[in-house]
Amino acid sequence: MKQTRMAAVLTLAAALAVSAAQAGAAEPVPLLPDPDTAHQVLSETPAVQAALAAREAARARGEALDAGPYEFELDAVGQRRDVRREGDYDEWEAGISRRLRLPGKAALDRELGALGNETAELGIADAFHGAALELLDGWFGWLDAASAVAAATTARDRLAEERAAIDKRLARGDAARIDLDLAESALAGAEAALAEARTTAAESSAALGARYPTLPLPAAPPPIPDPEPPAMDAAALAAQIVARSHEIGIAEARYQQSMKRAQRGERDRRPDPALGIRTLSERGGDETAVGLTFNIPIGGRYRAAEARALAADAGAAGAELDAVRRQIVAGSRAVTARLQGSLAAWQAARRAAEAADTHAARARRGYQLGETDLFSLLAAERTAQGARRAEIAARIAAHRAVARVRVDAHQMWAYHHHGHEEDGAAADEHLHAQ
Image 1 (cartoon, rainbow, N blue to C red):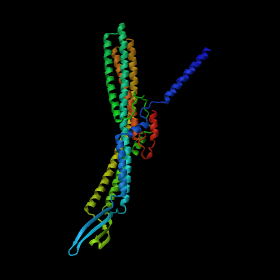
Image 2: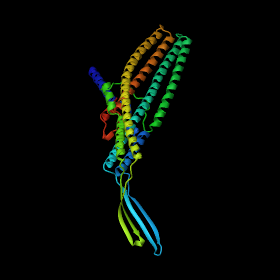
Image 3: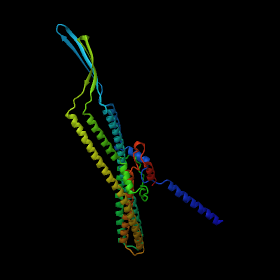
């Protein structure tokens, strides 16, 4: 009966343990802000707001280009004529005219307006991407500073335990007063390091809160899991970064605009004519007339020079496009190389921290057995604490490198240009689950 009751208790305890583990696994603490929060915060940044305003301006300019620069012009003249030996007469003259775009110019203007809208839309996406990188840097800066506080707190607590143990040994006569002095000195140093870490973390938190007022900051840094490399290899990631680069898209759109402006300038060498209707009344209405008017400027050196300048601008825009493409290719290779290096550095730092912890544990055991002096123990503790802090920093740096590549590849925190962004939502959910 007792065995049955004991088995039931053990079964219930196991079930509760499994349930607790499942509950804990069901609600993982995210390392980064969730996608919805990130998108809201990024949408509120001044850079993105400015880009949104620029889009409205581009749309208005597109409407203006579609309508054309010419409007109806009305002119009127009133006069009083004095004819000798006949008398005075009231006379007037009025007309209305409008300049007309020659065939082909209106189509080019509409294309320029469409390219302007496309450039502005890409400008929003690029501003969103730049804001995402800034948020990423600020977030990981705060995370690193907050993790430094946690590491410094652990180090301080460890030294406080050592100091308390030495104090008890001193009371029993098992330790010298110099050991207590050394422990107190080490503890004071750890408390100073903790105070400095808290100051740095407070500064980072304040700066992040000021730049992103609606961004919620957790009271404590989230757990930092082991970083996982992306599923794609470095070459594929670099290619995706280049393929999805909004900077290249903007440079291409500007190049196309310059080409269209050059075509427009060449067509403007043939001036647009103006057509109108004119009516007049003379000698008090005894004479009236209605006629058509035709006006056209005579093109000269000015129009030819403007056309050459616009053609040269198109050549400069093509060179700028090539420069931007090369810059993005170089940047994509740099961030993927940093990703690989950061992951390798973290793995090495983890091995170093494990070795330092083993050495510190042995030194602690040796001191308890009287085989090692306190100075050696504290030196081993400092080495272990530094190695643990370096491992945490390397782990955070690896996560930062992974997130940076995903942001650059528009797999995370991407502006949904034209309603969607390839793989963006899925990658956001993957990052949120980590």
